[in-house]
Length: 389
Ligand code: SF4
Ligand code: SF4
Image (cartoon, rainbow, N blue to C red):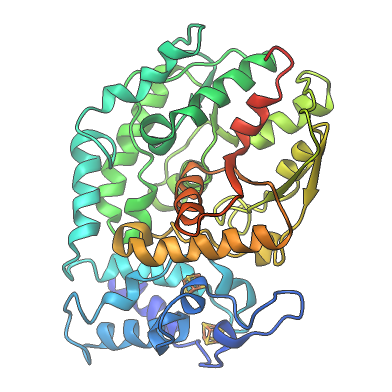
């Protein structure tokens, strides 16, 4: 980052009025004081919410604090969910600024951050040395999927390698809706976590690799079923790296019209179920996609959509984002368990969402409190309702 941009960043950070709104903002419909999931689920120190993080960032940038891993910890115990940004009275975006601070200060050691970035550059994903296995689920769905074509389903690392039922479900649903699509042979990570955690240079190298793969596939439209991939491919590639991506859509945007147009027929289940919707931060607050998934859920016979409070632009984060799951998995799970308790509070049978990374964390949160709420990706929910099943 150039000196001019660092000056601009400092000017932005200096706008924090230290009002504490992002700690204590009270909205009658929110059910608790404040907007920060970390503040709500941690010790209550000043650095557990944005005002304290900003003070630490300024002190590190001005050299008043030594640039040590310990001193910089508060910069990383944040999911970058943007819920503080949504209520901040100052004219800046605190969550976005914190993302930039992580980049500017990335000479400060952080083992988790660097291990993830290095794995992605080396193996094309943050999870395993055998990236080619991320397409193994294709052999289990009973129909062929080419690796080139006009429409590309970009599954993402978590669906491809950890929650393959989501990838299989998305493929089944797209096919049932009558779409032909391709899946890359050696799909690379989109690099979202590198951008969020401050490894922008590595993310640029990775993004160029992703662009090349997508270009070689011939895709004119890229469909994703992960909110993180959506934000990264649709917005960050152009904003950070000036890359000109083909059209990128989330599968919920793609399918809403298919359902309304009668291309995807859904059947009811054996019994009435209450389904609540978790707004992924990258899908909702970041890109404003709120209504499409709700319309899809409402179109499923024998399902009642029940809303958690808060929801949409005020929705609480699942706890996984911004690298927090890697930096402090226990805190990430506590936040997820809290979200699941909110779903229990509206007597939901199913907590559905549209991001495998959220699903993974929420499932672990649900397990940690032995919740009866079933956490499901919306693709799995739809796949269970296909007429051909
Ligand atoms: S980040 Fe915004 S809401 Fe939070 S203390 Fe600063 S000015 Fe107030
Ligand atoms: S971005 Fe989210 S987690 Fe981070 S300080 Fe703001 S509200 Fe808290």
